[in-house]
Image (cartoon, rainbow, N blue to C red; front, side, top):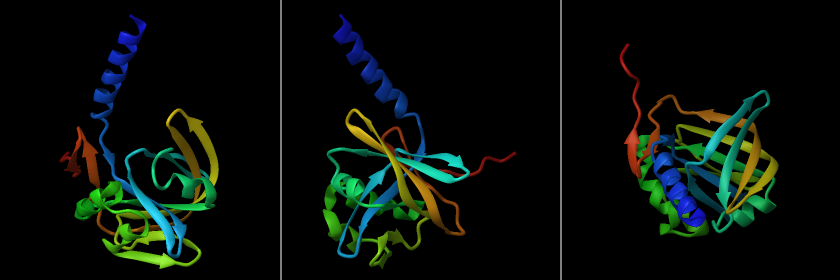
Length: 168
């Protein structure tokens, strides 16, 4: 009975989370020719002083080893124009070849930055919390690039969506 209840709770939780609309990000780690990235929706702000984010990374993700080893990571919030990047960074391509798609800036000492992202935030890893299948990485934001257009690529109910301001 308890296992059936837990299965039901897990299924209900997954359905509930499909209703949580969120901007899709590409998280990058590594530098130079040794870098990778992943599409992520589990990104959130923690505090504004100091500016800090949390990124949830599945232990089985290709970026997981980079996140353990590297001091920095970059969170690139996607705009509607980046829908084509989500599949690339969700397994269609591997490792460094993922960066053949999109307009990426490379620095030999830092993770790649998506040049035309809605926002790119460079983070210095400040902590890690192990939680079941994932590790939650905290990162203190050390630099931000904001694009003038605000047109986030949103994920809700298992599909892409766009966000727009509501009229008063």
